[in-house]
Image 1 (cartoon, one colour):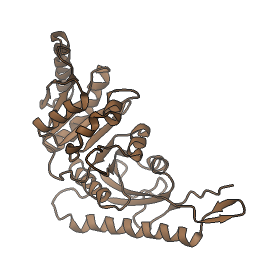
Image 2 (image 1 turned 180 degrees about the vertical axis):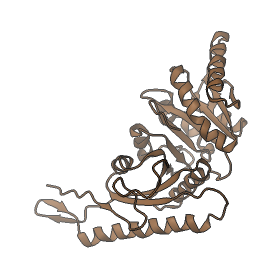
Image 3 (image 1 turned 135 degrees about the horizontal axis):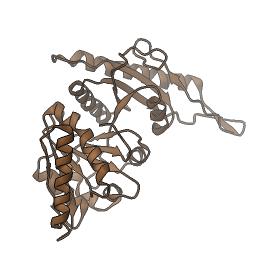
Length: 314
């Protein structure tokens, strides 16, 4: 048999939970996932930067992987000394990262309150538990570029995309921490009412940075009919009227392959953030799994915000 221990570590002074919450009730949170690697800490810095502009608090989260250490009587048990050491190391790294943000943030204006939590287990399971104890607007995690043929292809990332119930921001190692000037929302317009809702939910983020929202569809030759374009223009007009945010535009991209078309769009429009809604068996799956993805590798400096199909958040 296998003995599995699920372990929550309460970090004094910086732990946030339902029964002892230290942040105001109205404050929402960005969850920053980190494994303390350079790329994940860069993603955490990117998320902290967003939290400042959006005036959201921050929850730093570490999922601790505990290897099987000791074989015993037909099963496995954890070595408690090694187990406690992993917990303590995580504890110290979270505190170090928290202090780094607090001590290096010399800017005026809003400073997010930072809480920390760690737990043993799979990342998706840990995140599910964390989402039960905080009012999160977004989850931020880093991606690891393995080579020139990879773009957000790690199994961990795919699993997170497939299981996410809240907006998931994937931040590559070279993402710029500067201002967001242009946000691209890519869709195939299969669900126009959901697109209206998703674009409207992007407005608070765009407004915080005075960013333009560019809506795009990658289509094949002659696929963009006049009546379809008129329908999209009506959709954009409706969103602008609902949100009173005028900087929303539409630009179709003609290309036989979705990944290459998005790549060209990101390059030509100098995109700072790519946004897509993820539904089962939709074009996001094509991008994440298809060979076109390899041709997008040079654009891994652009963060990808994945919205669940039924999300009402950013």
